[in-house]
Image (spheres, rainbow, N blue to C red):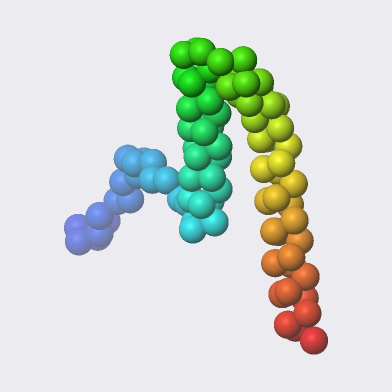
Length: 87
């Protein structure tokens, strides 16, 4: 006879929970800030002015590349500092 006090494990899956660390949240906020800045330039460009259209185009094309360069450099500096601290 089976033990009456034991409860069989539940087959109900746990609800999904986001798992973001501080670095991940900061990256998401940085990307959203860049997108918001590009959207701001786009709205201003629609209102008029060739210089604003040029700024929007340049910002939209250059921002992703510059963002990746900045994040890569920051990551390399953090790795370099952590390696230097181990010695």
